[in-house]
Length: 135
Length: 148
Image 1: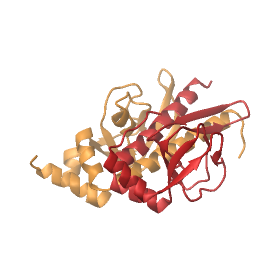
Image 2: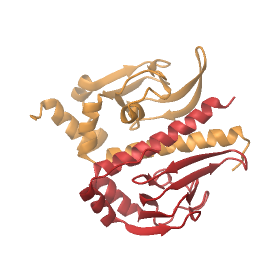
Image 3: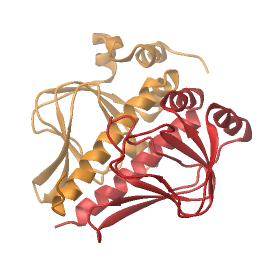
């Protein structure tokens, strides 16, 4: 995913809404098929995260996220359990948001809202490309 | 920049949602499609964003000449066309009216005016994209014979 940039004041505003968390490299952040917990969505402040959608043990899609990206919001608005695994690819610092906090951040900052939309849009393009390549 | 009457209509739509769609607004931005009529084609350049007022739109991908596979269906209140606008990329799918369908067709500039007025539009797009991703995952899983 493209790394997003926020100006310092807007990043500070968003940071203030959620709570800082750290995950070590390789640590699981959430797991496919598990219920969406609290926090439900995460903004990456430093480091990289992989979302992995495993269809079979050999077939999977990997979505890589970096600084400034947001992940975890996919399932919140379709009211479903987690559709992917999320794993810290490096040591990663994130801001975790509850659903209410996430909505506050979306409403407070247009860049944040557009970042979330662009990320889902790119994920969809990646999956659609896979669909096209299937017989 | 001075606001126009058009801006007022769009901002009203932004604040109030679909209930602000009037005959006047439809006259300015509305389009009507017959069943099987193609609304936009995969690969085309274009950045208009569409809001479904009534009817049903199917999201398809072209398999061969004149033949399409249905990926998803969209109904009233749903938005499409936003992916090409946000990424400045060609259309990712072909969208076809399944029944008589009425849409609002908004230029990126007009959609931006609406989008900025109220967070509901961001949530609406998140829901739309989330549903499409979920449907795409399901299609891939079915292809690999995964049962849930």
